[in-house]
Picture 1 (tube, rainbow, N blue to C red):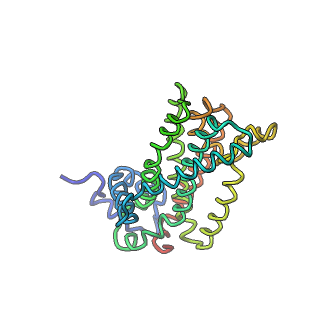
Picture 2 (cartoon, one colour):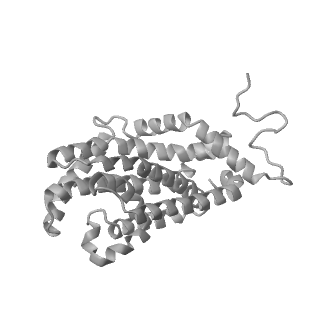
Picture 3 (cartoon, rainbow, N blue to C red):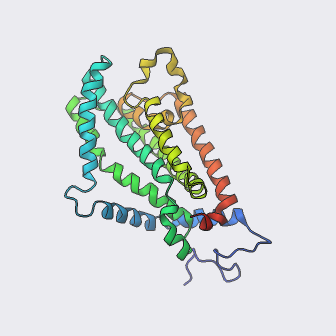
Length: 283
């Protein structure tokens, strides 16, 4: 029985292209569909990356959990004193903020090498390019999952548990995953073509950390806080943090997060359709 993911004989191999009929859109959509159907492959590769990264380590990826716990306690005590905030209310905020921001920052940073790091595979095997993008997304999601028990421990220690609004966490996580995928796809292509983009992205993420309410609460800005939805990092992060520590998310924040996600998706797909055939020459 033939595999449904394999091309039919009359279509020819997917990795061959007729210059007279490039079929860019059809090839890009087929790449996306095939990569998503084979999600088990990037998931297995992501687990292999984590295993190789922490080979010989006693705690493995839980070292990140331990370092995050130390940062949460240290920064929670320090900044609660600086901002004149109650530790009981500020500690859950900074715990969720640091974990979500770490995932966003690491995802954007790894997105710059999501394709170039798979150079050997791309040049030897006709795998969908989205497999390599999903590999980067799954790897950061699994690493972040190791820090999730820390949030529960902070809630228990401070006695502040979220209410029914925690259900809004599900669409927030879906938005974060969608952003991670499309950003990894877009930056993977751009950084494969222009190798100077990666250091620029790293510097930009450092600036975004201080300009976004990660360590400081939005209400500290006073009236200026109404402009925060213009910050895409704040909007996307708030869809996860709000249901956990702030009792929900404002409709304007949801709207801006959805709009930013849609914009990134459109730009990433447009680039993928236009330049997919050149990726193998760029990496």
